[in-house]
Length: 186
Image (tube, rainbow, N blue to C red; front, side):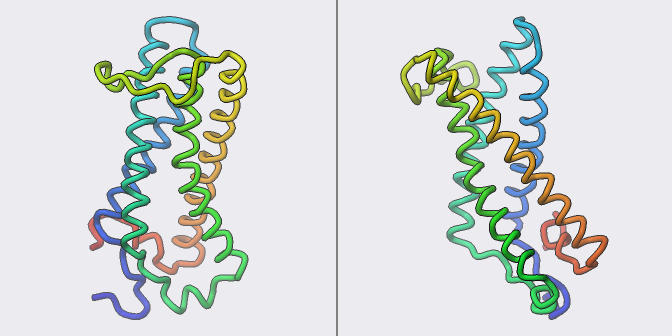
């Protein structure tokens, strides 16, 4: 049982969802950057299909994560950490997490809509066709493509901010908050 100075850990399932989603987002973003500059080829088509499958899978994982979060409160910050944290950091903490949850859904849904508008249906794992999100429309595809890209970069920027904040808590503040989300701690 944690004492008052040891921040209580998150539940194992929350930790699993955090790391699976976080590492998958980083991988998916990297593949998205790589595939966008490839010349038209079978490899590019394969990566685009994989990117779409992974995006739909992360959309489902995001729904699971949101459902978990809505039904399981995270552990409270220890009083000493909350007291030492400036008000702007508390606001940034909450705003970042709300933006994360928003973008967990916006990025893949925009990608799905773009794929549908461009006339490239998503066939999950090569065998399960998903419904088109929007009708085929070149104009709509032209509008959605940069929105998907911009939202993906916004999500990547949030990941960088989140990691930087976690490392600050670990190495500068030395308040033990990072350990709450590490596997094996529970």
